[in-house]
Structures are given as structure tokens and as C-alpha cells.
Image (cartoon, rainbow, N blue to C red; front, side, top):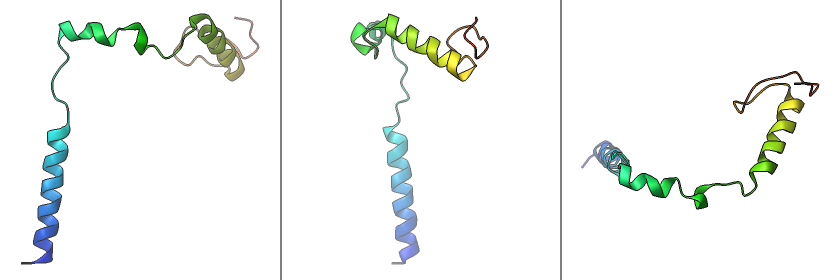
Amino acid sequence: MDSRFFSKLALLVSLAASQGACGRQAVRASEKQFLANQVMVFDNDPHETESDQHVLTNREGAAGGHGAGGGGCGCN
């Protein structure tokens, strides 16, 4: 057989496999309790995270979507 046939067949099989591996099912309401578990939170100390975001916002001079913006001087 032709080598182009095998390459097209391999491409078709890989595309079909990648489409089959995609999750197309929505999360049910009864399963959302596991997504909101405290174990899923990355930061252990919310005060430290808030402080870090405040310093980052003042240093960069812009808000990164974590609250109100201010100047780069820290005089919000």
C-alpha cells in the first residue's frame, strides 16, 4: 500500500482518539461538592495571599483582577 495512505490513516486515528479523550460531560450538581472542598485551595493562609496581592498591585501599578486599582505609590 501507499505510504500516504498510512500517514492519512494514522492522522485520522489520532484525531479520532483525541476527540474521544475529551471530556464533554458537564459536572452534575451532586458532584460539585467535591470541587469546592477545602483541600482544593492552593493557598493555606488567606491573609498572606491578600498581603502578597497588595504588594504586587502596588509594585506593578495596576490591579490584576483582584480588586480596585490604585497608583504605583501605594496610596490607595
